[in-house]
Image 1 (cartoon, rainbow, N blue to C red):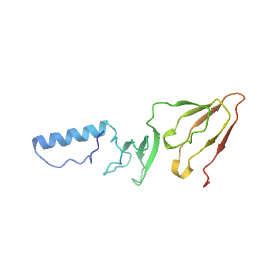
Image 2 (image 1 turned 90 degrees about the horizontal axis):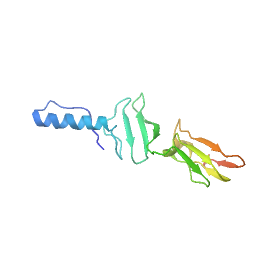
Image 3 (image 1 turned 180 degrees about the vertical axis):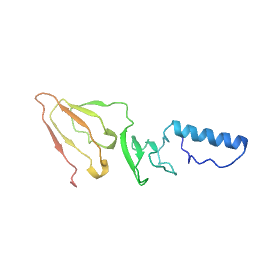
Image 4 (image 1 turned 90 degrees about the vertical axis):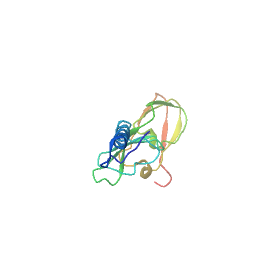
Length: 133
């Protein structure tokens, strides 16, 4: 996990090499970390390890857009309620028993958040929005 400002000052030998290598490592690791990079650029990618999501900087350089989940399981069997959250972005849930599915508030999930739901034959799933909605 590495982050860098991607601004390398005019410096000599070993200091330049170290700074350059740190910038390349941050670039290769998608600025992965628990907090957002201090210096942000339009289109910059960031793996937010706190929220477990992939993010991209918007065109106005004013906010992050969630583009995917950092989780490695994208097909999830579900027989009971577990609240759907931000890191469920883009997953497919397969309902195998009757239950009520609770959702996190849309404002928390953000614009463009989505999941797929497949309900097995004979199963009923009731979708329950957040209490504030």
